[in-house]
Length: 292
Image 1 (cartoon, rainbow, N blue to C red):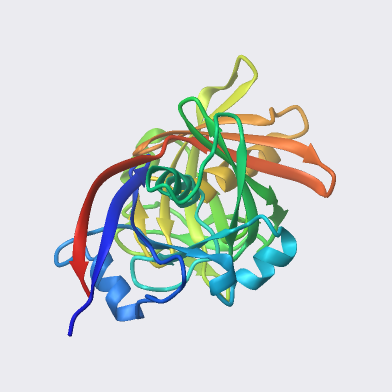
Image 2: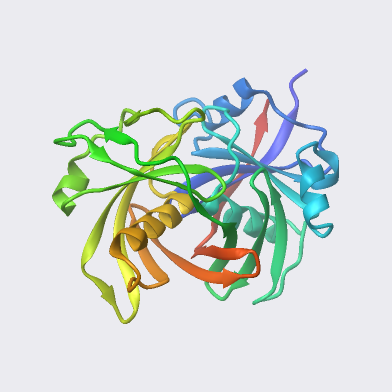
């Protein structure tokens, strides 16, 4: 007999998710079920599916509780094709919004909550107009692979950056060039990363810096999801890459324009090295019931 689950549809700057609560870890879905839910023609439609499960009831949650015993909730995130992802910067803001709206957690303005993810525990702060997630330490990782994409005139070198999941950032020359890239097919990377990567194409605004804030525009192809209206960790990777290319005088605060809106990125010193934070809105748009 088919079972039913209650779900909520949410998004962060157009990066959309189907969320459902499974506190005791009793209702994990198969890859096929998850992909069917995310299908935009035959399912609810989303860039990914997020299960809210207590860390204590998920094998991947054990490491989160070792890292921070207060990380009660784990964001069990999968891409739209059902493949597992380590982290989602937009998704974690929407996840916390979901926990608060469903009464699974409480969080006063300006307070933070630790959330378990496969990239480690991430602290999310409640703001007046959204949420900010400390995505932890980042690193240059993945070298400078050559990137080819449809309607990109010539192959370009990318910069590998890891912010809990792998990214390759590519600079393009103009808004027209950025708009002209066809991301209906995944860009080709040479050499190809073993686990794949999200690929961001970015163009600086002119001027690059206004009132101490860097400004860039970005499009992204996410592994396992295709082109999306926004990618939180991708916005972070893009800002880090442009700061790296711009040199030591570049700012530590950035405004990143994505097709679905605007995200904020901030780099700051921490005890274990430089961290990077992502801020932006989180919206819940409707609820429903699914037979799975």
